[in-house]
Length: 321
Ligand SMILES: Nc1nc2c(c(=O)[nH]1)N[C@H]1C(S)=C(S)[C@@H](COP(=O)(O)O)O[C@H]1N2
Ligand SMILES: [Mo]
Image: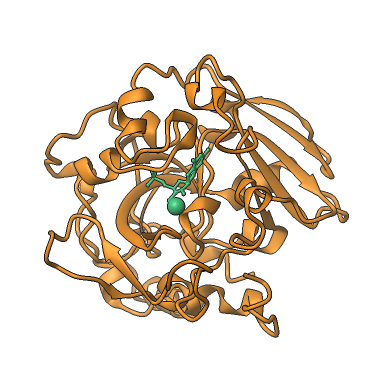
């Protein structure tokens, strides 16, 4: 794993030169190259975000892992979604998840860990400091966005659940409740939506449990109350509305893998050199860039290669798609 301290450092803590220099070393080691990340602009939440709604989250800190690229608008991030539990159209989730009540929420934890049980959302999340993480999102359908998430590293939740030495993977499941998630009445996927990571991927400092957006509570269509965000993988890995976490010895089979194993693999790392069987992954369409903006090149590991490539050293990325 990469040095874990980097994600613990707050910009507000820094003044003394020694601390400052140490921090720079940490950031460099973590692959965060620029000083710009340290002297970052104020939280997006503190600016006027047109159209934003929902409760502001208190005490959100900046993260050196954020990109300095301009985030997509609130309208883009909350109006163009994939969330099959609420329909298969991009505008369906915003409309059909409007009345979904995410709280109260519990997460059932099981498998190879010493602290299994049913945890209340507040118990899992509220003891941790919230960070803003502005990440690139690359959907396997070849469109992309830049999203200012608020969340906590998945690693800090996992540490508390104490996986044992037999835990090699983490499996996540979305809530299964067709009354509350009407898209589950149709077999568009094998419900509940399921995803998985290796233990090393799950513990990586970039891997986030998001509970907010633009400094506010996570809108329903983005996966309230808590969803995964793995920025170097195709968007479908970032499972929404997590209701179950299981530590396993064997590799989980994700929903998309179950549906079409020839098209979707377990790893799903963003890779411009490995085409989807039905389209190229070399380029992507940035949402919100305007009709005539054109496509831009897709980056290996969605631009996070410096931080994550070592997780896949020696692996054939064509076979392990
Ligand atoms: N439970 C669940 N999680 C999901 C999906 C879904 O249909 N159901 N769609 C995935 C896909 S394909 C993408 S691209 C992202 C989109 O996240 P966003 O709508 O917050 O941008 O969510 C992912 N997580
Ligand atoms: Mo996606």
